[in-house]
Image: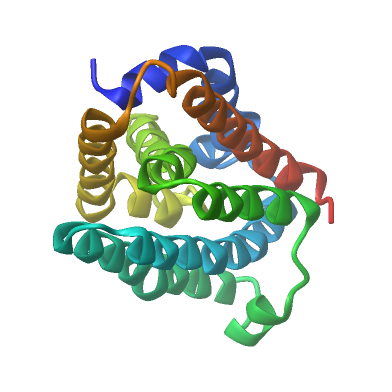
Length: 221
């Protein structure tokens, strides 16, 4: 069992609520309310700006050239790929890049992203990548699960591009790399005395992920 599976086992209830959230189910079935997805898409764009900063922080915290390169790839994947996906999808609902960038962060967006940044600032790379894991690795798991839902990638599903992005080879490989990096850091730095705090970081980040889905459904600010 690698460290990610151990963390998931420790937060099994929170993880199930996150990856099986009604918002996620609606993405796969295509039945998610359009207003909910639009609100999520805007907030996730703002969310990704802060997550790019988190990977920039990982570059600063890096102690080896390989760690620095991995963090740089994380920044690039967010800024050059994920954020552009959001721009393309938002255009379908008449939203421009400027509309996305000028939106006000919802409380759920602030709570999650600042938790990750604060965790990284206070701790080391293991702490930071543990806080990032529910997003990066979790979206890959969600994407893979949804790709198996009949019709999820079909032309009738308005959210098929989202499912295709996170179930696609490029994102799945990036998540595998993140998982491998997390496991390597755990082998180097994790002690049993440190485990309870690390598990709580993962549990809290997973809760905040589920609350981000809640925010989409409730349209809360």
